[in-house]
Image 1 (cartoon, rainbow, N blue to C red):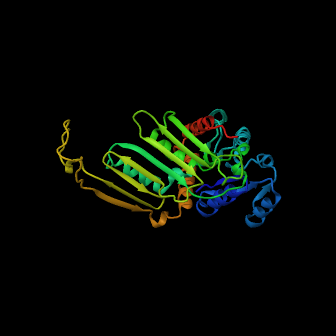
Image 2: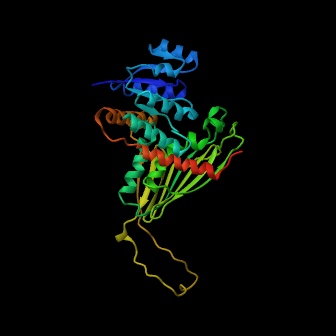
Image 3: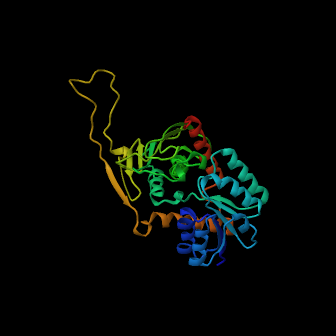
Length: 351
């Protein structure tokens, strides 16, 4: 089996703990990291001593190599666009960390560069392969819950943060940092083929030491599609669910490891007729529905969410790059996601 030779730009948490670790531990039969770049000499020295990689304190020097099949751009968020553009111009296939960009026009520019150069280009949106998300889709697609009226997604918790990802000028904030994961999932329910109506409220609280938001409420809707209600907050001391689904014949609630859903069959419903006249006596509409209840627990072999998502994502990248298989996370999907994020920022001017 041919191994894809990889160079990684960035040896912070993403470049080292996500990408490099994935290549070494999850898909080592398909990928081989041969070079890394980071502006910090200590990180380069560590990578060279631990794994024997060729190292560069200037990524441009790494881009002079002619033996890399794929360059992974795991630089800080505000450098994703310019460094990706440089790597494409240098003739490399590129995988870029999320968020790809802050503006949809930059996504268009990068897509055009990749097409003009005839190079492979993808974005690391591994949460598309999350077991809980796939299970929610399976239940909805079964039709058991009827017509889906609303999908609520909450990536909430309580935490303080004081690193560069709290700064606007480095493309920080909850929406650009955490947001690409749930937003990529959420757009499936509202439709990936067109821009939805967007209403967004963002707030910066004392839990964030920078100037970017750490609390987001985003509502999306399109005619004929469910309303999607997305929360991303660092101020939620009681994160009760990840998903809630409202349907005309039932509903669903659950988190990343356990999901419950219940529904009723139409043929088992009591027959009712509309009554215009006042109901007799002090009464109110009421009936007994026969609920059917089911549950799901994440399989033991998928319980490590990080490993499961990364393995599936990188297997898809391998097949797409070497075998011409379609990307699961298409560039037009990412473009729609960034357009929604851009509109959210337009509606919320953070001081």
